[in-house]
Image 1 (spheres, rainbow, N blue to C red):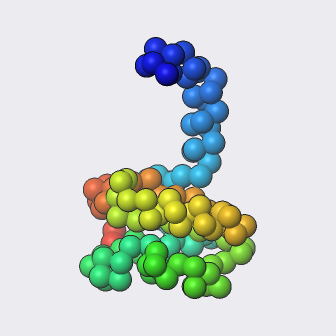
Image 2 (image 1 turned 180 degrees about the vertical axis):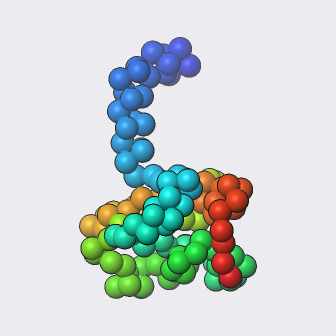
Length: 128
């Protein structure tokens, strides 16, 4: 398929549908910080990075569940709240894979856009 043929298939309606669905399953660092500041309940933050990365700094209140331990620690996830998953940065797919796994198991889940890297770049608080 040529580039021109591909562009013709990318209609504004299909683009709208794609982004509409995508936005339902992502949360930005500003929105997450607002939820935390407002004392909103009903969500848990899950850090799927390595233990070392978590110990070097993480989002306040995040639960450390390294991706390689994810499946065996499934009983720790709440069925009654939304899980917000994050990884290192926008290029790390561990968070996407963890979110997909949780969704497949019936959990409500969203992915933090940009991961911990973007959280820090926004100047949001971290803890060790």
